[in-house]
Length: 450
Ligand code: BES
Ligand code: ZN
Image (cartoon, rainbow, N blue to C red; front, side, top):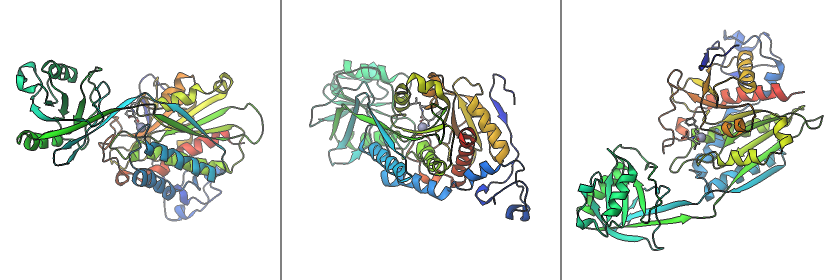
């Protein structure tokens, strides 16, 4: 297969989906599927079958459920992210791996909460650049500053919390105008109705607290607190010395020393307010299942599973992981299979994109294409130029890397639930988890098997 500079889309024959039902050994024998008139892919090999016959979609779906419903949003540096790390660690140990926890510091961040005088809580996000409040927070009346133009402020704004709508000009200008008018704090509400507050870039750092709230939150405050001259209490503090961690499991080769290394990676943290089912309990669950399945097979190359934290604040976990590899380990590293958002059930996401940072094919994308042809992957595979996930950290170290991610072919759109509270298990497809597991699992096994 040859690739030009542009993304190449390779349509693969639409064949059998229920690969878990294959009878072994394969090769056009009279299987149950063939008897039912379904097509069995001709070139599925016994070594592929060893992997895909064992990858279990129910187990993966249960792991997505645990990560998203029992734990919930797994924001970098929080207790919930740590719980996810513990869950992954225990699971890998139960499969017989010796597991390393790699702890690292993450930058300070601001956290906050907002309450009305009758103790109603309003969802809030504190952008970096915000000032903090005293321990007890600030309690003040609101000032309706419209869009936050200079002309929207009067003397009355002094000492109050300015309530400003998103729109027309930058967040930084809105905050600067509020400070010039003597406001004690700023709340910016969205002009688009979304379920969670957005994360605006406000510049700064500023001396006064700044929060971001939803459109609904802003409208509720306009009607209630502001109309009735009531106060709100805004509490913002710096969250310092926070830590995140990577969980690493290694499968040593059965023979040979200093062999090539293949890395499988998936991030387990999420953005605030998002259960992160697709992003990225999906990749985490598939990687855990591959750890289970591949553990028992003799292999000639070293396999490493890197479950990384702190992806959503800028690929911090994977950068740390790669930074801890010795020069010799980097040289031996031949591939990174990064799974991020591999399980959405969104009907338009019919393609598996293989994102590489430079848009060029590499050992990982070529191996996956060859595997897809052998095993009869139903979804179209699309090679595409894109960063934005942990494959970037591996690529930057010179390791051939691909991010496997489901998207709409042609537009490259992600599901509409991305980074929202709607990124839940309801929008996850067990079949698609299985398809990703089969593709990546059989690809990795084709590289590391004896
Ligand atoms: N799961 C996404 C992956 C992704 C890839 C999203 C391509 C959109 C496009 C990932 O977790 C994510 O949200 N990445 C951030 C960037 C990252 C460096 C913080 C993004 O794309 O906004
Ligand atoms: Zn992600």
